[in-house]
Image 1 (tube, rainbow, N blue to C red):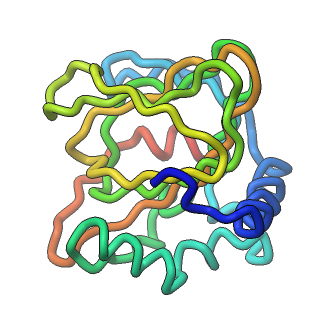
Image 2 (cartoon, rainbow, N blue to C red):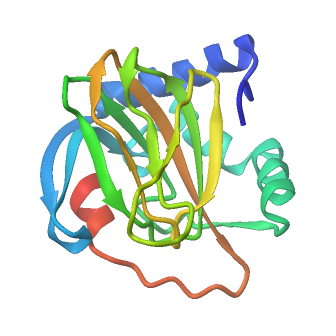
Length: 188
């Protein structure tokens, strides 16, 4: 969704991201459960942020729910009990990356708050295989939603600049989710 956020909306979302960045912690991990892929970035779960940061306002908004219903054809269900209902990821150092993985919840809605000059593209498997052959370059103010529990995806290493993203997870009614330990390892 290129240019989804207006200049005014992006400025408001940046305030949320700046609040989250102040609480983020650095992670440099190799995740065994995802094929020994790296996680090199600063992160924070929304549940660790003060309510006035605003992540919950974005997550529960009619605008977000309406947009996701239009994109997916189903009404999204909130998953507030999870560490991953809302997270902020900051790839700031040369080589920072979010290695290949699938999410626990079916819908990932990602708002790009800041985009690097070089790197930080979304890599994904358009054929639902284990090959990351799709590439999506995004600018600040862009967003995407994906079936993240089925599509293998990653963020390419950043070479110059910062990639800041707010990521929100949703479920579908009646969908059973198998929770893996990877989100807890990264965000707790």
